Amino acid sequence: MAASFFLAVALALAAPQSGGPPLAAPNTAPASVASASIPSDTEIEAFLKDANVVKTKDTKKGVTGSLRATLSDGKMTHDAQIQTIDESKREFRTDRGVEFDFRDSWHYNIAAYKLDRMIGLNMAPVSIERTHRATPGAWTWWLDNVLMDEGEKQKKKIEPPDRPAWSRQWALMYVFDELIANTDRNQGNILYTTDWRVWLIDHTRAFRKNTSLKNPARVTRCDRLVFERLKVLDLQTLKRELGKDLEEGQIKALLARRDAIVKKLESLGSTALFDRTPSS
Image (cartoon, rainbow, N blue to C red; front, top):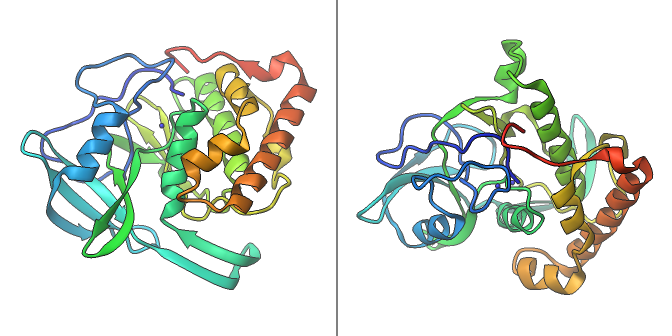
């Protein structure tokens, strides 16, 4: 869903290149290198909202029937992912078991992006609401310089050049997934750009109403800034920022999980917290 790590992403902002899933450049990133070529979140949001659709095509990835759209505002041409899925089922069966009151919704991509920025994570793509052919959905910035996803990394047995930095990013991913109760963090939605920065995409199956953590053992470390911002989240602020995309029950469950995450990290002591640097 973008906190940041080493080296700012060099985006190709002219004609979009082939390949690569939707990702966002961060607006502010404590450990990023600033670059005038990278639009801010505000600029990306405005572009996604107002740019004209030049063409669309199927993404041929995932199961949500998303589109890849080429957009242009006369100054910049760039791609976006359009997801309009919004399905609910009393029971949803997978090889991992049965989920009751299942929902798969584009709203959760937007909620994940907003929450990501609220806690200073900066690992999720910019995503906004917009209508396409009379159907509302999530429009998400598409990043071109994707090196690989986690599936390809494992298949080719590729090791990151800075394993400690990679490990810190994964620690933050675990915290975020527990916070949003993400049920679908698979290898295809963990992406690496050419600087080995981790990006998290496709959160349509998150924000469940469970109040306990699914995998508390994975919550072991956290960036200090993210931890402090987690602690100050409150119902009123979350309702104001996320209320259009989440029900109040989902927000209250999120806060309960936040409490569990904070309690777990505090129990581990100060060594559980780290400060990100330009290389992590």
